[in-house]
Amino acid sequence: MMDRELFGNTGHASSRVIFGGVALSKSDKADSDRTLELLLQQGVNHIDTAADYGRAEENIGRWMGRHRKDFFLATKISGRTAAEAKDSIQRSLERLRVDSVDLLQLHNLVDPVEWRRATSADGALEAAIEAREKGWTKYLGVTGHGMTAPMMHLRSLDRFPFDTVLLPCNYMLFQDESYRHAFDALVTECRRRGVAVQTIKSIAQGRWDRRPGEYNTWYVPLTDPADIDCAVQWVLGQSSIFLISAGDLRLLPNVLDAAERFVAAPDDAVMKQFATRAELTPLFP
Image (cartoon, rainbow, N blue to C red):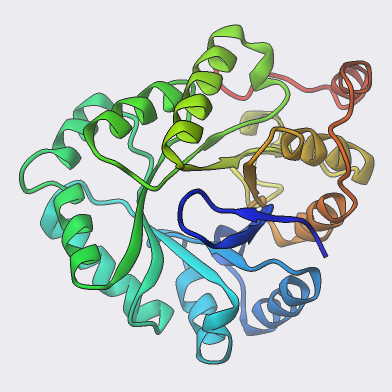
């Protein structure tokens, strides 16, 4: 069983690895059933999904009748207007077969124009707040991809007291001083406020255009178990940060195994050797 930590100020003790529901975007019932068994066996008690992750919400919805109490359940809203967001929330609840989720997140809110639209009058944030008032969710969060995510999340926290943030984090990203500085500033502010920090792309080897289409990920993932160990355990070595598993079910057992055996982050020498051996390259241009 892997470690658990309090998920921000929610009071929930979440597994350090959160199951990334996008891995079920193209799955059938048999794949979904095997995944549920693995999550329960490994002690994963937190699921992250989204309205636009293919069949993911429907597949997770089949679990909820018997296992709703076993998971902290999060989904995401992609629409930027209040009307789009409200429709997305209602459809997500229907697909997930629940009356409420634990966390609703504004999805990939990093473009300044989209940010203004979503956080203004009649924007998606307004619908999310209404959903919380109606009991459709307990908590609200914001997610982001790309190099500007830390900066934009700080801007979002200044605009509204979100409960969670989600953004990329891996060893190669931290070799970019500007990203690391912005990431550290965000984490410092989140700790001050009690905001949970979730991370993605932990096992990215490089950009998707190196070997497109081999895996259900938006990047070329690490596949060697020893490399996955280094990548996962380095992220988990960042205090109070949660790791969302990769978007391909073939990678899930190794990610969970690495997390279950986590004791401490590999040291700098080990990580430099790993980066060379695994031929890591920057994920973003």
